[in-house]
Length: 250
Image 1: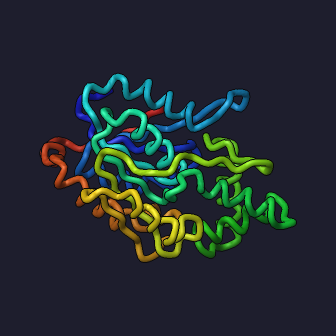
Image 2 (image 1 turned 45 degrees about the vertical axis):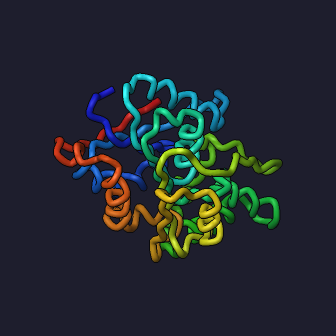
């Protein structure tokens, strides 16, 4: 691991990292950021605990606490790690993570399958509108393929038979939680519920629009909010160094 790593972005599945790149490319102009990617083979078990264990093995090489960030299920992994290893985390930024961290788009998908008589394809098509807004038919078809793969790759063990939950609550280090006002997955009430666990140094910020993947549509706006959050927490040294962005795997 490089000694100049400052920020580690947690990605929950390889297929979703394409939506993180615009944001990471923007903040990499100012901070040294790497993307850690969780993945598993089809015959292997998958869980948040396993993802956190793998992340722990990776960060054991780092001699100093770093700044963690993640979106959706990736944010749930980062949050769980920060609670278990607070001495390893300097700050935490969560994007589109509900106060019940397991309430990701995957849970929304399986809930619709349970409640409505709809096929997998129909629910995936509906999920595109919820996650990205209205899209042209050809784009919807491509995004359905992406989401279908993400259902297989996510470490969250949701299924048609059971929706899991993760512990609710805050963290000991400074935390920022970002959401979108028109996100139907992590809606404003789910986002505002974080106020129950906020410390004075924590921050909750809402993007005016952008749906669930608001950081993909507005990378500069979100990135600037993240940079503003990091600035007071003794991050001046990273602005004077040569910034970089690189991808890592578990």
